[in-house]
Every structure is written in structure tokens, then in C-alpha cells.
Length: 167
Image (tube, rainbow, N blue to C red; front, side, top):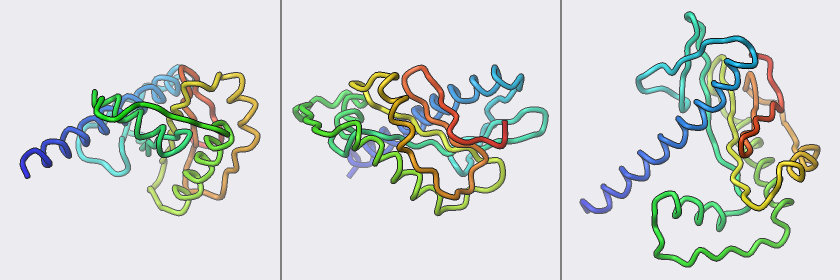
């Protein structure tokens, strides 16, 4: 029971660190691109993160996109230094599956309400897809009506603005 609780807490800490890293990367880009000075606002927040610039707040919902469930599992096991399972992944139509995963994320996230000034940050974990190839695939991303002020994809060291009214 204690070991299970420790694993859950460790997983939650890792998830929060990942969300913060993604949020900080996006906010750094927003600050540089739009001459803003957003900084993290501490405390429990929903969605994942809140940043403030002179009293103006933005919140960020962070999520991840992977080729498929197996690639997500391998990625998170690696992040936890869990090498108990064989890290063998076999993707066949992996780029097509990645875009399908992003479209499913957009569909699900668009059905929820997040409050005002909320951005969606989709961290794409696609280690065998080049940025050039991913850039070619963006045309296949379908953005449904949604509650977000902006939707961004973080791919390697690139940030792609899919849709944004807030910036």
C-alpha cells in the first residue's frame, strides 16, 4: 500500500514537472514574441498552470501527443527510469497515427470548459518524425470549435501556433 502511494506520488510529481516545463517553454516564447512578461502564479490552479503579467492572467492546459499508446507508455517509463519492460516499439503508420492522436486530443479537450484566457499546449513526443515532415502533416489537423484563446503545439524546440486570439 505504501509503495503504491509512493509510485502514485512520484508519477504525479513527474507529471507536474513535465507540465511546468511545457508551460514555461510556451510562456517564454509568448513573452519573447509578444513583448510580454508573464511569470508563473504559484498555488493550486485548474487547469494545469497559471501565469500573470501585470494583473492579466493566462492559464494553460497541458497535454501530450504520441504515436500511439505503446509509444506513450515507453516514453513515460523512460522518464521514470523504469526499464523493467522491453522498450520495443513497432509503428507502422506512425505519422498518420500521431495526427489522429492530436485530432482526438483536440476533440476531447474542446468539449470541456476551462475558463477565460486559457491556452492549450500540446507537447508532441515524436522522436522519429522530423520537423519538416511534421510541418507537412499540420494540414491534416482538424481544429473543432473550442473554448481556448490559443492552441499551440510544442514539437522539439519549435512552437507552432495553430490558433490564437490571446496573443
